[in-house]
Image 1 (cartoon, rainbow, N blue to C red):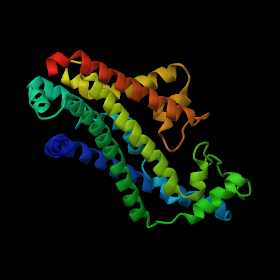
Image 2 (image 1 turned 180 degrees about the vertical axis):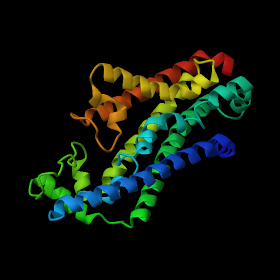
Image 3 (image 1 turned 180 degrees about the horizontal axis):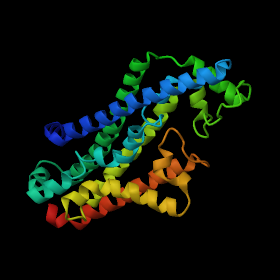
Image 4 (image 1 turned 90 degrees about the vertical axis):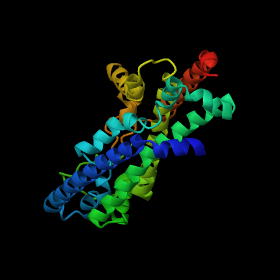
Length: 291
C-alpha cells in the first residue's frame, strides 16, 4: 500500500481531480447558500407566523446534494468519472509499459492484484467523501450555522403530524429513507448518504479497474465507470424502475417516490460482484502475459 500511495501522490491527475471536485463543491455551496437565503426570505414573508414552517427551511439544505443548485446535481452526475481517473488505469499503464513485470518480482501476484483492487476502492471512496465534507464546512461558515436544533424539532413534529403550517407550506421535506436520522441531526442523515455514495464510488472504480483487462483503449478504460453509471440510469429509466437507479438512490434529496433500502444493497452488491468476477477472470486470463 505504501508503494501505491507514493504513486498516487506523484500522479498529477490526483491533484487535478481533487481540485475539480473541490471546485464543483465550492460552486454548488455558493449557489446553494443563495437559494437557501432566497427561500428563507420568501418563507418568512409568506409563513412568518408559523415557526415550524420557517424552521424547515434550514441552512443544511445548501450542502452538496441537498440543494437545487446545478452544481450540486452535477457532482452526483460526474463523480464516477472524476474519482476514478487517478487509479482506474493503473493496471493498464503498468501492463503496457511493462512495469507490471518489475512489480511482480518484488511481491506475490496475489498480493499485487489484491492491493490494486483494495487501493482503488479506498482512493475513490476518499476522493468522493472529502470534498463533500469540505463543502459541508464551507456552507456552515457561509451561513453561520453549526447546530440545527430548530430544524430537527420542526422535522420531528412533521413526522409526528403535530407541526403547524400555513396552507402554502410544502410537505416535501418529509423523507422516505433515513428519516429517523434526520430527526436526530442533518449531520447523521448527510453522513449516511455520503458514506453510501463513497461505497458506490469505490465500486465503480473497481469495475473500471477490472474492465481494463479487456479494454485496449486507455480512454475507454478511463470512462468505463461513468459508462456503467449512465448505463444503469438508462436501463432503469426505460424499465420505469427509477427507485432502483443509483443516480436517484444516492441523491440525499430523494427525488423520486417509492424509494426503499433494498436497492441500496442490491445495486452495490451487483456492481461489486461483477467487478470481482471480471477482475478475477482478467487476472487468470492474462496470467501468462502479466507474470
